[in-house]
Structure formats: C-alpha cells, structure tokens
Length: 243
Image (cartoon, rainbow, N blue to C red; front, side):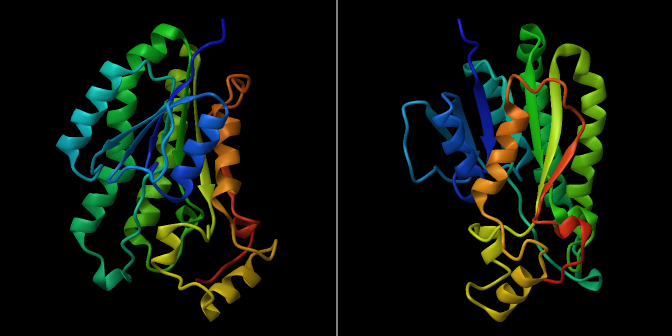
C-alpha cells in the first residue's frame, strides 16, 4: 500500500503557494492550505483554513487543529511578507511581525506535526526563504528573518535526521507572477525590464519554477538530502542584482 502524503502549505491561496498546492494535488497529495483567504480553485483533496499567521494565538490554534484532523507528513512554510524600509525607517513592529510569520509560525506548525512524523518515521519539511537572505536594500526585517529560516532549517535537519525527517530550504529570486513581487515592481515597468536583464538567465522566475524545487525536496525518495538551501533565482545569488 502506497504511503499517504498529507501536506500543509502556508500561503497556499496565491502565487507560489497556490502553484505548490496544484502540483501536490496533481501528484496525489492531500493538501491543507493555511492562508488569510481560500484559494480560488477547488479540489476534493484540498482543504483550506483561513488564518493570519502573524497572529501567534491564531497560528497556534490552527496548528493544533490541523494536527488533530490530519496525519501530516509534509510541511511547506511558504507564507511571507516583505514590509520594505530603509534602515532609518525600520519599525520594530514590522520585525516582530515578520519574525512571527517566517519563524514562529514554522515552529508552531512543525511542533504540532512532529509526533505523527516521528511515529511514522517519515517527514518532509520545506521552508521558503529568499535570495534576499543574502542581503538587499530596504529588506532589514525581511532578510534577517529569511536568513534565520536557513539557520533554523540546518538545526532541525540535524535534530530530526534520525527520525526519517528531512528539512530543506528553497530560496527564490524575483518571481514575477506573485502578489509580493508586484507590490514592489510594477508590471511592464522599466524596473521590471532592468531586473530581468540583470539576472544571468535573462528572465524573471515563475511560480512553477519554485514549486518544482519544493516537490523535489518533498519526494519520499529523496531522504538523503537534508539541511540544504536551493536558490531558485536564475543565477542571481551568484551575481548582483539591483531592484
């Protein structure tokens, strides 16, 4: 009998998260989307829970609810926000919000799912960082928390390897078909064209580029890969870009 794949995907309603949900559904996963709104598509194996993951109490409750209802085998923590600001304008409240969303929510979700994963001696955890973790103007709170995800994943990889649980990171570069990207780069603008030209592969990324990387880490056959960060950025992480 084939093992059942039950994945929690945060931020599953739009952009990269929605594409991850679609690819998982196509691969016969059962998928639970945790986002501020429901996806604009339906499927018999798609379950949507509306929750603001910046709200710690609501996140903790959602994590407990999902873990009590589903035998979670996969967690993809994709939800994220930017809140850009130059250093003189960085607000501590924004740092607190991004710390909760990018790091705290991941901890709550994984803690809730760990008993089942350990019992089954199997788990796949994928955290969505960013090329911005390497540094980018106006990204103090964002880059700090996205870089934190990389360190946290490496720590978890060491702690959970003996339990059959892998922990990896996908770090996208500029992905044009997302609300986050469009919140800072207008479509068809000179900034968009200059950014695409600055990327070594000479194009912006798409959500499906990132989702395929996530699916690699989620595959049950890929149990010998853990603690790794895969930049899906068109080569931007080994070059220099200016947004």
